[in-house]
Amino acid sequence: MNAPMIMPPQITRANPLAAPLAARRAVRRSGRETAGAYMRRCRERAGLTIEECAAKIAGQQNDRCHARNDLELLEDDRPGNYYRLARSLHDHRVFGFSMTVFLSLVSATADAGLDEWAGA
Image 1 (spheres, one colour):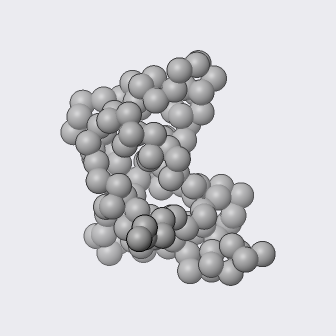
Image 2 (spheres, rainbow, N blue to C red):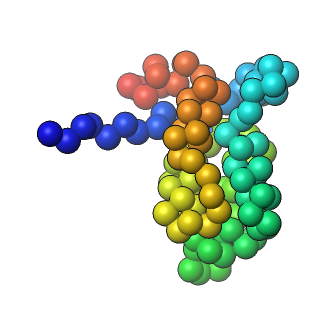
Image 3 (cartoon, helix red, strand yellow):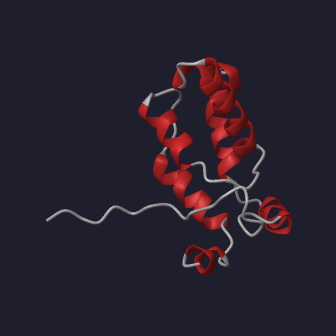
């Protein structure tokens, strides 16, 4: 019997509750690592730039621009749904990181109010 697939919370850039600034600052003050900080640390440990990572997951220049922008936003802990980006980085083995760790960090910093928005 197959277990149901667990999807990450739907966080969108348009949703102001996705990662409010106060919550992100609280995480930083608490000393807990954010998903963006974790991804930056892993990328830098691999010795790659954001541009190099974008080139490895996107074939066309336009796609590279989007990938680069999304990776910059993720590493800056900006609100957004970065599941596809993280999945692409993981599947293309651009740099080593744990999807489990990434998803747990995302869920730890997501606003509980998002659950109400998902049903809307």
